[in-house]
Length: 87
Image (cartoon, rainbow, N blue to C red; front, side, top):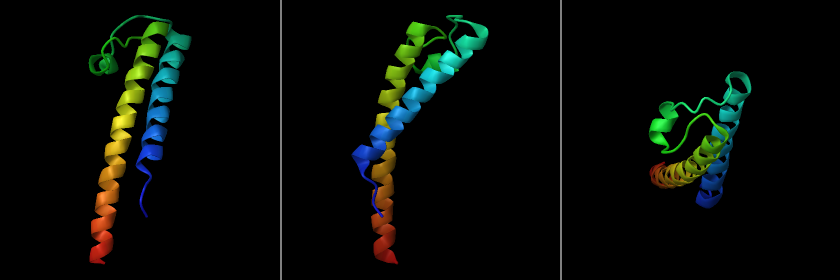
């Protein structure tokens, strides 16, 4: 079974983006907006625990999820094709 690369990439992008956004809001709800850089802030330039930082993190995470999902689906399809022919 082949994966639809575009659909899988968009799904990964939205899941990862919303995950980063809601996780940041969850932290702000209990600890408040600190503006501190986190480990994720080292990867996503401009991300920190604040409202603006959550939007920046969302944009980075969507781009990251889109690329990661597309690469994963493409590799999966190539592997499924090669293994399917050998069986």
